[in-house]
Amino acid sequence: MEIKNTNKRPLRVPLPAGKRLFLKPGEKGQITPKAAEHPPLKKLIDEGSIELLDLGRGNSKSSGGSGGISGSQDSGGSGAGIRKTGDR
Image (spheres, rainbow, N blue to C red):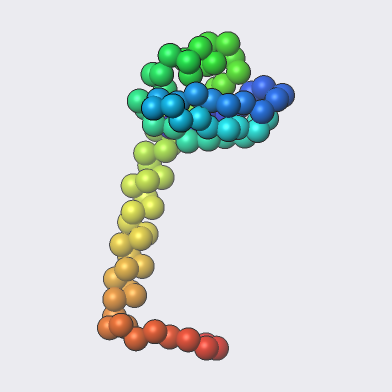
């Protein structure tokens, strides 16, 4: 889940468990769905200081990324522990 700082000043976004996310003006950050329900964060969203970005986009990126990782692991496994160095 992504959030964006819509203010013209940096923000310290309060998250659960006493954590904070620092966002510069116009910068985006990642939070968990659980963090989106945190009351101090909800207050910033209601004030308009922070904007929640689309929810579905983050899920498709993670599933697509895992497919690419498994493909690279298969091709790297054929070396049987031999490290390739130097110019190719």
